[in-house]
Image (cartoon, rainbow, N blue to C red; front, side, top):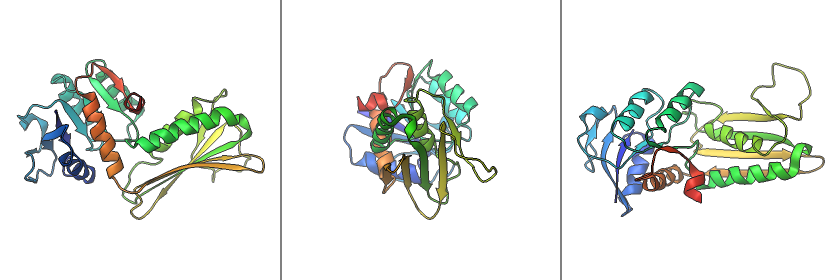
Length: 250
């Protein structure tokens, strides 16, 4: 049994994770942390981690990037593995996460969906086969409440493609300010925000007289919640280091 401390428990993703865990017998949420500490009748909810008295095997953090250092410090001080489901981190923040992984096990990915991670593998394979004969564009769509753009997942997909390229690639986010032809070594990344779109990602490989498209559409937040809970169970007892979906999918 894996005992989970859920940070951001009263948020949208926190509530979905709670529902997912209730239907499993290999883990349980022993406590939740949220600034809005409304009790849910399932487990105790605290405003801050210093008030939490329950012991946990793994932390799942879906609370956003604000005060993320406090959550990392808590995990490090208490030697608890942490699953980070938040995106929008700066390079400096990522360095701090990497530093924490020297002391504790850290599971960090831009997307908890197994399907998205399979998409990244397929995109990497396609890029290695198609080479520079195909232009690559990524289009991501999310709900109108999402703050960061482009999505962390779009960047993850672009990074996967770049890893298969023999030439250095650059990311192009905005073409309206210049008048010039598209270069062969760029990946266009485009963000759409509207309505209640959960998450859609499309990778376009455009060649001479043919187009190959790879795509993934998330129909509910549950796909991310299931991935996060699977990651938490996987991380129980893991030694210090950085982990992601590659280890979980192996």
